[in-house]
Structure formats: C-alpha cells, structure tokens
Image (cartoon, rainbow over all chains, first blue to last red; front, side, top):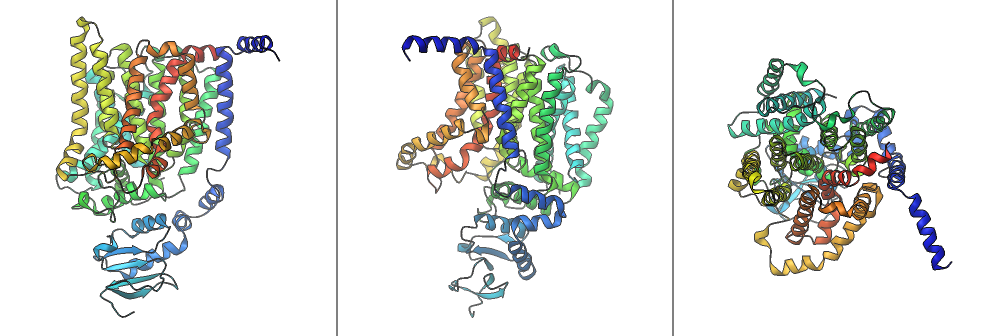
Length: 154
Length: 460
C-alpha cells in the first residue's frame, strides 16, 4: 500500500466520519457498554447474593452478608460484655472489613484500641498467645474468645 | 421502604425552601428544578436542623423534627402548590416544550431502566461495605441511638470511629431517616438513589437551558449511565453527594457566566457551601469557584464590572455563611485529617510523594481509558476537547475549563501533601476512582457544551 492509497483511504474515511456519524457511533458504543456493565456482575457472586436477599427476610440479610460467625460472635459479645465497658478487637487479621463490621454492630458498646487497655478484648482467632494483663473471660467457639482485663488465669 | 416517609419530609422542606428562594429572587422554577433542587436544599436543611438541635442541647426527637416538614408544608400550601408544579418557563428549557418525541421517550425509558436497576441493587442490601460502615453508618447509628451527637464525639479516637473530622451531612441525613423510621440500615440506603435522581434532574434542567431539550435529555442519560455514578448510588458514600453538589454548583456557575442572572450564582454558591458539609474536598472546588469568578470579573468590561463584583461578594458571602458552622466547629475542635495534615508535611515526605507521581498518573490513565467504571465519558471528553479545540477558549468555556483544571490541580496538590501512614500508592489506589466522581458532573457539562452542535445534529 503506497502513500497515495493511504491518503485516499483516509480522505474517504473522513468524508464518512461526519460529526453526526461520530456522535451516533459513540452513542451506539456507549449504549452497548452500558448494557454489558448492567448485565455483567460487578463482583463475583453478586447475583447469587441478590437472589438470597430478595428471597429472605431483611433480618436474615445482614446475617448472610456479614457472615453467620461474625453476627453470632457479636451477639455473644453483647450478651457477655457489660454495657458500660469498653472493648478492643484482636486477630481479625486480614478481616479489616470484619473488624469494621463488628465495631459497627457492637455499638453502643464502645470500641477503643487494644493499646488503650479496654476492659475486654474480642479475639476473632485465638492463637493461644497470651495478652499481657488479660485472661480468658468467655469462649465463643474453638477460635473466638473474649478476654477480660485482669483475668490473668487462663 | 420505611425510609420513604422521612425522605419525603426532606423533600417537603427542600421544595418549600426552593419556593421561598423563587419568591424572594423572582426566579421562575419548573417542576423538575424545584424537586431536584429541593432534594439538596432539604438534605442540607435537615442536616442543619440536627446540627443546631445538638448545638442547643436538644435531642433528636421525631416529635421535634416533624415540625420542620410541617412548617414546610404549611408554607407550600400558602404559596400555592399549583404554581409550583406548573411548567418550566425558563428560556432555554422551553425550546423543546410540548409533547415528548419518540426519541425523548426512548431516552427517558433508558434513564428509567437505569434508575430501576439502581433501586434493585439498593433496596435489599444492608449497609455493609467498609467505608460505608466506618465513615458514615457507624456515626449515624451513634447519633440515632444517643439521640444526639455523643459528647466528645469529635475527639473520639480512630479505633472508636473513623475520621470524626469528616463532614457530617450524610450521617446526619441518615440519622434524620432513622429518627422517623427507626433503625433500619437497609432502607436508609434509599437516600442514595434519592440524591442520584436529584443529581440527574438538576443536571437536566441546567443543560436544557443551554441546549435543546432532546440533547439535554441525552446528556442526562449519559451521566446516569456512567457505571461509577450508578454504583455509588447504591452504597452509602458521600462521594456521590459531593459530586452532585459540585455538579449542581458547576451547572449554575455555567448559567451565570453565560446569562448573568444573579440567582444562578447564588444557587451555585449555596450548593458549593453545602458541599463543605458533605466532604472536605469541597474546599478545593470552592477555591476554584472563587478564582474562576474573580478572573471572569476582571475580564469584564468596566461598566459591567461593579455589578459583577457585587455578585461575586454575594457568592463568597453565601458560601461562607453556609459552610461557616461546620468550619467553625472544625476549627474550635481542632479537627485535622489523619491522612492529610499540611502542618505535618516534611520535606522528606513531600519528596517521597513527588517520586510517586508516575504511580498516580498511571492510576489516572487506567481510570480514564478503562470503560468498566466510566464507560466512554473521559475518552469522549478528551476527544471533544481535541476535535472542538477552537471552542476551548471561546465564551464561558475558558472559565468552565479553568474551574475544572483548578479542581484537578487542587486534588493533585492534595496527593502531594499526603502525610498519612501509608504511601501515596495506597492512597491513590483507594481514592482516585472515587475522587473522579466529584469531577463527573462538570466533565459531562463541558462535554455537552463542546459537542452541543454535533449532538443536536446527530439527533435530528
């Protein structure tokens, strides 16, 4: 293909690509992309999640979204930690989201940092490693425990 | 759906305020503008109501709060609801008055599908995302359960509540909803589609004053179907609220610059002032607005300048008045952002941030050219800027671009001044796609004006 041919092709293309055509083409691509991104799941399992949420009672939905263990552990903690006490959280590991959710669900129980020596510490995954100044208070399951300040006998 | 009634109360208050403004300023407002603006006025007013109840030591009791919508409703009845729902008589929006054409019906159907989709994703999903819980929902739960803003709230450590320095508009709006509906962190999310719809309505009204109704509808459809905008209408996040307020302020600024109506700049400034209550980033846009106005006025003919200077002073005054209670509180409580504190910025940290500029630019280009979150909005804007480059320095466009690029510059400067514990890579990675929401309204507006003739030609 020589330069003359290329120039001629570009001229032909330019004569077809009027602003009207460009705008219409852009709109067509836009609408296609819009439909694709509406149909396509934003995150894996999104539709399965929505299916669950639409077929269950709202009260069960939060439990499903945050996970049963977290919901039950929070309820257990609320049952066992006095209302006016402070708590901290430990070993939520990469579950930063779980920690934020727990803090949210626990309110009005007030969370403070573990460095600030809260009255209780909720341990998501107990490794058996002792926490200075704290001892076992209640055991939720084989991994989850609540530690209490001053309970030095585990 | 229990949130519908308190949201309706917000709308009643807002519509009453919009009508009051209309009466005082002599401005004619159509139904769509009244309802859309009413959403933001009402949202701001409900936020103010709770803020001042707290300031005066009164609890957030529904029996007290309900007085506000009652006063609004009484005003509306007195004002004559019939006039409020009359057709828009603003000059440009009448260009396509009458029955909707087939194409307009199709575009409206597209917007309706998008809205239904947003609602479908919203109504059954409880608040559960990280930032939604940490930054907004926990605060709203605290305010609701305590029936006030807890004592020493603004001094709470990060381990108790994240970023107590963040502006409280969204948590207070949620608290308003809870006050009437009871605590329901699923239905409260309906407030986001409410903001989304009002954002679209306001954009349409503003666009229709600058182009034909059909074209304005099409551009509104484009805005509605930007995936990131739709996605953020389904989760509790103040970015969409800020984006809507900045977009609204920008639209009214554009109208003021092209038509010179004082009421437009007042509304622009009001929305910009209200944006301070949504997110701290509003400061960047407020500065951009002030600089843009000052430059615009300095380039005006001397005989017009004195009037324009008075408009500018009114604008600054409105913005300051609206933002002042929050800024005063921030100052008195010594609230500082944990991630961006200029007083803590060292030369070493600045250099470290500067070295990471390529990373920020890389994230930026990924956003601009990736259609997953933005469809073609940024690509189309760039193309319009190149293909219609002669327009860039014409009329009001140069000022609109000045606002836009001052905003971008402000955000870039803020990235350079990051002082938080994580590096700039982390901050850019986690924020850039949200920050671009703040620019989407102005970007779509600029795109519409650059390609106005082309769009109108294509829709013939």
